[in-house]
Length: 235
Image (cartoon, rainbow, N blue to C red; front, side, top):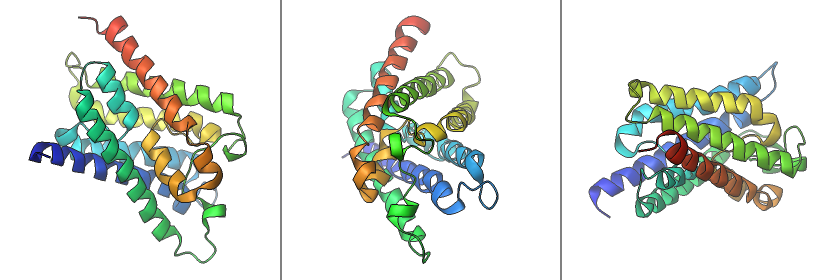
């Protein structure tokens, strides 16, 4: 693996690690209790700010995808080679697992914590949904929210966008917006790696439901890339 590719792999690994550790950590450690914790709004900002921070930290190295749905979307949009996307996705999934593992090590230091009751910020539907939304609601939400998220990314990173220097901020804030609306539905994924990491460690229902948080974001990503490539930024 050449140095440039290794640097990109490392950037995507560490970037996804930070996203899972800080984003999911805000739910597990800082808490969703509006009185004693940061609340749902705080969790939403934690995910968005993680993206903003990493965009400016590693964006110049790998583009800061830290999300398989983004890498796949970039391939469909003609902005990335499939062979490079495979390397990105591997790095992202491994980074998410590492981030979830670090979060577990920290959270388990509290006497009354357990994976069964505290979890790791995993996503879910039906009884696994924070608001008990069903599978159909979860699937539609994840696909549509990912479509919107990728739409913002394509526009923000377009060579025709004269405000490209603010791409990291607009992308991060769009993720905040998506979380504000979607946390109660699925906990919000729009990122297969972010879902895979916690699900592998938590197991059980989280692992059995993780397929939705892989499939729906990928579908949303592909549709967004096709819409952007053939309807909006046509050559």
